[in-house]
Image: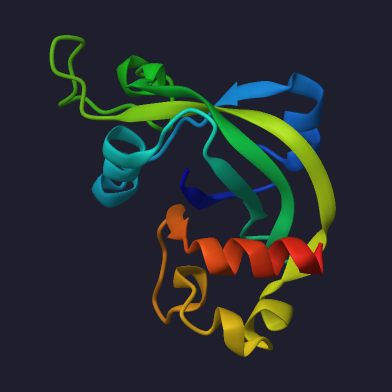
Length: 149
């Protein structure tokens, strides 16, 4: 099993919405490294920290799990979507996504709190310049954060 942190802006898709929907496709990823994580490494049952970004208090707000393996993201084919990609075709899709399943909502563990723990010093979300929407989480980091929740 692997562990992940997946970012979403709460105005676009929040932990509360996932709790209502129960499962959801993680659409709109347009970074090749993040896409490759979904395509090549994510497996059914992998655990996910759901992270709210670009908001008043960014941080981990819940736990989800990978519910369906990577498959083509339909938003790439829709000219009305902000995630439309004119170079992508159904025969050769460029963008994939996984489905995630809601596990639980947690208290917010914000960036200052994450940064305050030496055990999390190497966490990718804390690296300067990190803008990836999906990052792997080390098993020791996962266990440490779960104790904070």
